[in-house]
Length: 193
Picture 1 (cartoon, rainbow, N blue to C red):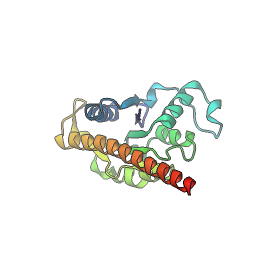
Picture 2 (picture 1 turned 90 degrees about the vertical axis):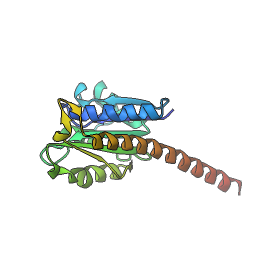
Picture 3 (picture 1 turned 120 degrees about the vertical axis):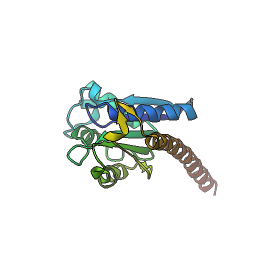
Picture 4 (picture 1 turned 45 degrees about the vertical axis):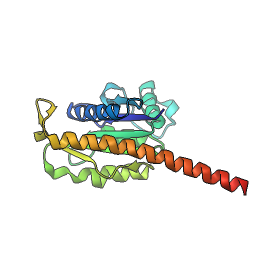
């Protein structure tokens, strides 16, 4: 069974969690057999990366890293802090092995106070995910504070884009299955020659 991890990119804040919950509900609606899990990094006592093997970190750190490594897809929802990704999210990337996201589908949701920071995902998050081997979904969801009212997403365009991200994630997993089957078939043909 395929597994999708939804990861909040900061230790506090509710908007990223709300966006991830919407996305995961769309995934469950369109594929009820898909295993999903929401990881709120603020719920864990994560240690700072210092180059040790994963097994030398505390159990919370090992748990989060292993959940990401076991997943077939990851959807990251992060706020924008000082026009950048939060340090807590950067620490997660630093804890992961270099090719940890190889063959994984990665989706992005960004929240920010204003439209000024929409390029953060394009210029910072996408390159990190790509470098680590992820197949990044091209269209990310950018949500401004004005798209929420009392911690509820009230902009129908945003809810539609979250649904599209969910469907693109499922489609990406389907394409990865086909790609793996093609690769396996090709290896078997080469062996038989």
